[in-house]
Amino acid sequence: MPDSSTITFAEVLPFPILIISRAQRVVHANAGAEALLGEGLRDRALVTVLRQPALVDAVETVLGGGARQQVRLRLGPAGREGLVQVTVAPLKPSGEDEGALLLAFEDITAVENAEAMRRDFVANVSHELRTPLTALMGFVETLRGAAKDDPVARDRFLAIMEREAGRMNRLVGDLLSLSRVESEERRRPTAQVDLGTVLRGAMQALAPVAEARQVALLREGLTADLKIPGDPDQLTQVFTNLIENAIKYGGAGGEVRLNVARLDYEPVLRGPALQVTVADKGEGIEAIHLPRLTERFYRIDTHRSREQGGTGLGLAIVKHIISRHRGRMRVESEKGQGSRFIVILPLE
Image (cartoon, rainbow, N blue to C red):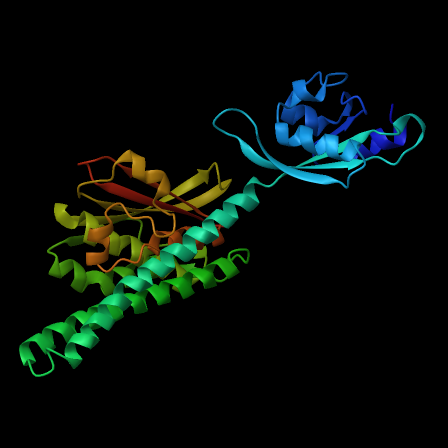
């Protein structure tokens, strides 16, 4: 049996710990191990607790005098398994403890997810830049050759090149904006901002876009006493993005409505808040897409989004800005019933 100091040490550690004997039976399991692997672990054979060949091999290696081992296992309830790194190390030989091993379990699911997100992000950025760059290089080659003396073809190709260059410029701008917002996310804005002024400015800036698409921009609800702590530039970016998306993708219904309401008590924010709803009467969004709308580069219709000039980063930026303001956003939509993007920002 391990001495009391070893058991006490295992209990205070913030991650699951198993101590097993040389006979590969569980001598002690701390609270974290019981939460992960179930109760009643003491005196059970290790193979009945964890049926993992890689772990058994690591244990036998260390018991045979080898150096400490690390293995990665998928553990947890079916459908919600996490990636766990198990370190197998010998306890110091001491009387009856000789040959006993300590198994420490570290949840590295978040690390794995972050690495997967990084790989996906690099792949997406590379793809988004490669497509317009390939087009530009092709047109440059054509203009130097067959189309060099063809003014009609030259003008057409230059127009396409300008559009593709603009697309790359927007993408780089959004990437820089996303990076800046993420770096500031933990610093909550403290300046007082008139949300009414922010909304009015966003609507005025997008009025020509709405007029060109024959969409009416309508303002409803509160118009006065809309001061909140916030960053005016970032809040303008939030509502410009949401209104522009409503015009471009939901404008088929002919109108986009902004409604501002006061919530005396918002349970999640635990206090009073302002709720801004950007609603359209477009074709709506299928439920399967709603949870992923704020993911970077996630698009419902990739071709249509690119045709409209979208970079796939707008709602990701919106999410981070709202998070910085300690607010929340939800999306309500049904296919054929339009969409409602609801932003809730704390008043205090």
